[in-house]
Length: 607
Image 1 (cartoon, rainbow, N blue to C red):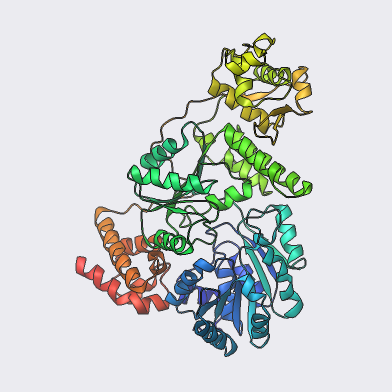
Image 2 (image 1 turned 180 degrees about the vertical axis):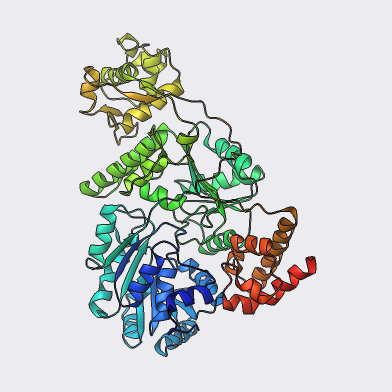
């Protein structure tokens, strides 16, 4: 263990244990604040280095750091990763045998661990609380703290009980961390965890290496396949679907078309679900098709894309899910196919839920913000960051910036749509209203004698897809709402009145036919290409092969051994001694001791 009495013990631990030359952003300030005994609430984007903010203070302070995490399935990987850098870590959860749990409890009580990961359900048991009271505790870290929010997308009821930590351990510092929280959720975290007096550290939510792209949904699965084959062949990625059935069908579809894919949802047998997650973490070039049950806490750094085949419920959910791409800082994509039926489906799910009216109102507002992001005419990143209360200039790396939409005065078209909805007595869904607008003599139109209406055929100049695009924008603008009945009945809101009267003009986005995906050469702001030469690339591939075999022997994910970014640096520097290898970012003393001779010998064999 490093010397805690050096001139800057936190930096010394960062360099000697974790192998990084310097702290990033607010990390140093957070580490020093918590190490001195202060409470903290940390909002930092995925990949920003949140874990170091509690791991290093745990090493600096006397006692064991207790990490509260809902991610039982990933605790083993987190403990393995710490073991690789020489940190004494263990976990307590329901996957352990009685003897294994007893051994970990003894280690906690005897001060033989630096960190212990505990599921919130286990933490709240009298046995666990008594164990902690009988032990020396360095700090409590509450990871994924947004789980405490009843308004959030990952609410965990047991998180609300974590206020007991402040009551039973008033002298032990607490640090709550999350990558996803709007101002309302942040305030709720502070209140529920009794961290009102804690110092708050809010980093920029911007992930400049992620390119955001939202396309008009035509044939979602085919568009997804085109996107993967055109822009990410052979890359690891995550595809999110709303239903379990769609997860299964999409995984089958991708496999049938040559894209290796695995399903993941809560309805699967635990063994299969855990096995698929382990394969995704340990193997390369796999695509995980999943419901939102998958992903929180996933540390795989080389996920090159996250795709959505269904509209997320909120911007928080969208941001957290897309944030699983590009944790290594290299270019990544957040791609979504979105259509009118997504809006109808989400509205219906909110209206049909058993939640109270206040909760439904909050969820509706979150969905409105998500629709606004989908239908925006300006930079998506600006809109995304604005939701989290942060300002930004246009990024130059989202679909809006790269291929600006054409906007036009759509007041007349919007008036036609609103009039048609009104003339059919606000009793029909989108398909029927569009048939009336386009003058389609369907049986239903004739049955209701809607071919006699003044609005029949007034929209013949536009096709079905164009009217659906206008319909989505009408809903996003709050002029039209979707009823919760089985038909998705459309109704006018009070906001429609001034538009119908000609007192308010409307700007609309011009419909574009979905284009086939192709690789784009645009690099995100701030990204520096590694530019490996042919010789360096050959060495990098050798290192990847060595890492794969080593990870297999150790039974850990490959990135736990070394990240791609570290191996690229090694390939460029070609260190021929342990001292030269020590200068590479991501190579700490324990990894030098474990792998240094092998890496130096591998490089020497190619010289």
